[in-house]
Image (tube, rainbow over all chains, first blue to last red; front, top):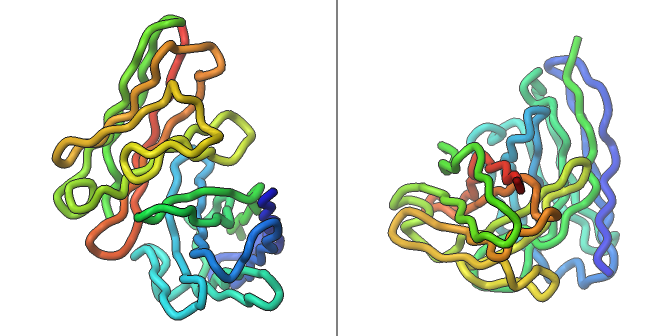
Length: 120
Length: 110
């Protein structure tokens, strides 16, 4: 069974930084593209970033490009999101998501989410 | 990146079929057959229903089906059941190598 467990959420002041971690199990971690997706308090979903299995290909949404950095450690079966220059509007649940088999990218398995609150 | 456009709400009676639309542009939905759909119930993470426009993972009910025409994708729920009451989201891969979500549709079973 695929399991994804996020950690590292919390409260941070505007302009601050935070690093989210995600541990994967139940699948061959290095074989899959991984994503970060967030959900705002009003329920809207936003894709943030993806990283290829070998870590060579990385893409970001415009809203976080230059502020957020995705990375992975295939030895530790872990995915990371380093967030800097955080803004109040970055407040959301952050999900670690495994891509699925198939031609295009899609979100096959989701973690339980980590809440990030940006507030002074 | 602008979100894909979904109706805010759709409703139907048990046993009926309903369709949720998801409208994008030639730069996303119209560019590739890489549209996926998700169901989210309160307090849970979204769950994959359809990928690559019309493929269904084995764990999803056969009552869910997807299609696409031009810049608009659609999710049909047949034989509507009370447990189908949830929020539904579409997403598409774009020419800019990003993914974009729809705003979500709340399905109500009358």
